[in-house]
Length: 273
Image (cartoon, rainbow, N blue to C red; front, side):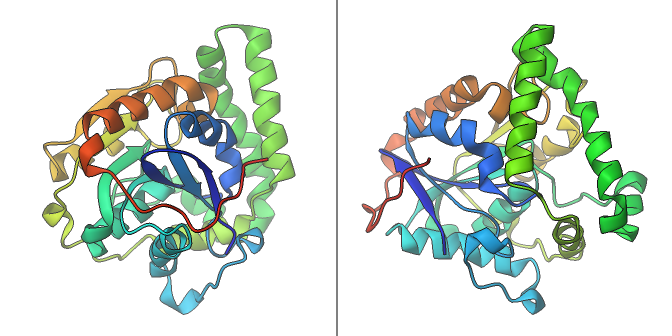
């Protein structure tokens, strides 16, 4: 399994969103690596992940991939950070392996109560056929990119950089559709038995046009002790468009709980290119 392991300090396992590629989060990985140790990977069914994937196990295959990555990095426990769809994976991992999670960070995360809306159901009916429409619809993210970069040409530049990452590390519409299907009908019992520090990070309600911040904040009902932070002038892509500010938020959270967040030293390391 290909595991990216970079930085030093408190170990943080960073789980990507529904497109499955860790490379889309590269700005966040680099910013976080200046504050802590980051372990990340592409989801198990991505060819570049070089990981075993048993489709019959469904969503559990992604959950157990987190344990595999931690084992490869020589970690008994770590902070587990899930982004968007990755938030579901992080949450399920915490419920199933509470002894391996020192804290949870949920970034614009999908909540367990989520169900595909009409737009998502439209794409799911024929994911490959509708992939061009999905790409075209992604232009709805530009307003949040412009807000985060504070300037038309800066926004254009940021959008082009993100587009280049997406083009260089493309998503597969069929795998994305399968992931949506896998996320329904999961047994979420045991979530309230997770007793670790929890940080919930969202963008602004008018800017996140992918996962409504109100849905992500539903995690606060599960864990009333959780802390919620809004990353200003961002929507769903805040960890990318304002990576340094995102890393500061996570870094401050880690500093507050530093004594409880240690893990073992790695057995192997690979730098982010």
